[in-house]
Length: 141
Image (cartoon, rainbow, N blue to C red; front, side, top):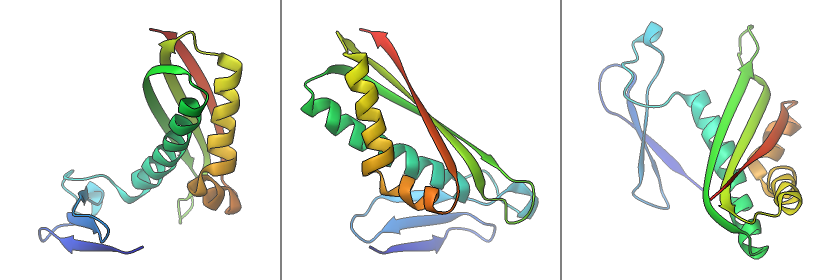
């Protein structure tokens, strides 16, 4: 796995490209060092990675369970320590599932498997001492 970051301007706007595709992600630094709000910040990318890793696995498990899910939304919020380096200490994931006749118990078990067993981003962060919690909310379609 390999990525490349290319500087876009003389501030801190970069364009990242994964070598496995031509998809580009814009990254920018905070305003206090010259960032211009033209991309996501690096620590936001960590939350995005955790949320996407978890929801991809959750979606696959729900599909195998033959759950009638019409929409999945994910919110990920991280708390960082005040001292430098300001790494995450706690992260909370909220899955919002919309569907018909969702078996909530099975869906919660699917979320547990997705987050705690199959998501490699979770395992990497948890190994570093980050406390990761999650919840599942349901809406009838």
